[in-house]
Length: 61
Length: 208
Image (spheres, each protein chain N blue to C red):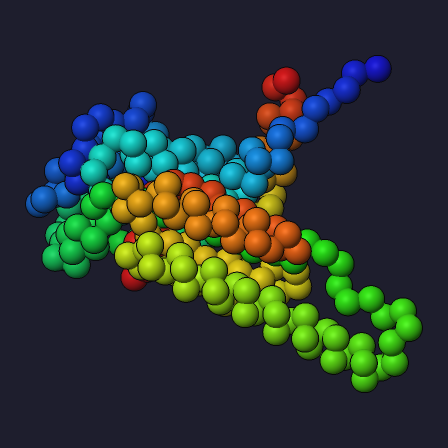
């Protein structure tokens, strides 16, 4: 049986924060920013990005 | 297409796959997007964040751009930035020598127990606990504010999350700031305190 280790909690927390910062903060120059990521509204995409990235990390182990 | 990551001053080294466009006194750090590439995958979001954060150690000041700022070419970027260059250069100056530290405080211990309490007593106990939490967090924020050049407190706190704020802190003040946070965490074992950073100061970059 293979055991998939989850990334350390600390790593997950910082990844969540990184994504939140990228999507919800920062200066806007044109006001015409991308409204969706992979077809999902940016309002909802943060958690999906996290889950996807954690899955990718786990798969890479 | 051009993808804007951030503006920087005192830029010493570029992160991998990033380019620099000098506009006035600012370095616009950008990436190239191949024609037809939407560049909106989950990995693109994470990559954007990693490039911006890499600039923190490579520049004296960083003004992060929100994900999704696209321009057809360098000239279009220059036109858009030039129209707001005075304001952007002022904001970038404010970020020089600073990083952002994020602090979140949550209640660790379980909510007030209902066992043995009548309704009114239970509500009073809950009110008292909430007031104590608010006072403790207010004390923490006041202490951290003294270390910070600016603060950005989120109004979106609910449930067990009591405090969520970003603090713009001079690089040389990071250790003192962390010590204040540690001291608070020691005095308040009923709270979980998470301090992350140093980050690029995204909370202070402002929106259009």
